[in-house]
Image 1 (cartoon, rainbow, N blue to C red):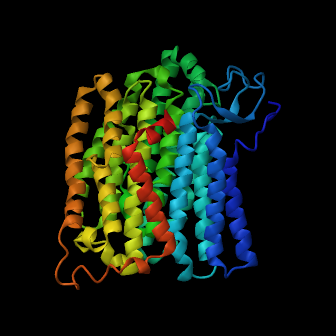
Image 2 (tube, one colour):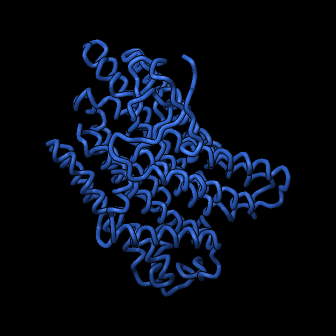
Length: 505
């Protein structure tokens, strides 16, 4: 192989900007260690630059992609890029670009939520946290556009391993337990995915995740069986990262042990990376047909059921949101259980809808917890009468919960569920459709349980519910910005859901 012959730096900007931002933050910490707030500001700038770099990729026709790191077609037999030329290590089509934007924007909100920590953290702590966040975000944006096995594996681990350190940096028993659970599952996941990559290469003979290689391998029954095994292994490996049951055990422990800003990152940006990794692989093996995707149907139904049932039992709002993530992950992969042209767009669209609502819920809890104390604000009963005592926070949380439940006026969540179910119904997977419908009803009960508390009259005894939640002047400005931006995004997308769905169509 003669090496890379085509490099477009601007196309790589969604990945390069967070990486360069992480380096700049660490350098700044050496030169001016006391300016903790500047680290967050620099991170926000890097993420904004990455977002601007991803925008040109929106609205591309199906089959087209922005490419970089390309090689000559003669160097890799049988591999071509989206434009018909030599293969490229980096291909960002419309879906990949939409997922990159989701990763960058959710990381932006995470940095806002983490901003106040520089006042109480030790010297150098904030720089490490911000650089790890940016590094993991770069991995998430890279995996969405990965086109070869090496980039796919490395980018996915880059999006995962920094989160282990981010959970552990909080210290304390819960943080250590959560970090160890996350580290154990991450290492197991990597081993499974490495085996899946080996199966792909053994069956296809190509280092590139290209559909033509899968089509050629599918003609031989023995090689086809190895490809099917690769699909099953990828579902298991990515299932750990996407919090799919039965690979979800780390999720509640990590969420509870981590600072709330990092829990937000785990619930949002890391899920973008996981789904992107799954889509990159599945698009290359669609030639295998529906039987190869049976594993996805099983884990989708199981994840919805386990997540919803466990969420119904929680009085800790962070654990409730953690189990909600498990249930919502089932909805995310639900359309992928079918061989349909609508599946990828439906899964990606549902993920984006979930992200908008979940990030808003976490932002509200973080903003209130910063003022009233996170220990108390974890209790469900603390939110009694929130809508009357803090109308903005109450309205924002109520809309987030309604959207997650799929109830008006959370129209975005309702439309996303319909879009996710459409390929399943079209593919006549009636058992899976019934499981999803039942879980949609259970999910309503999960979120209404919290919503009812928010809508109740405040307790007349202020020591029970009124005192811990101070007025808006006590909010940290970064938290206020995070809540307002997330609330505005959910309101706009509930009025016009196509704004989200069109990003990945």
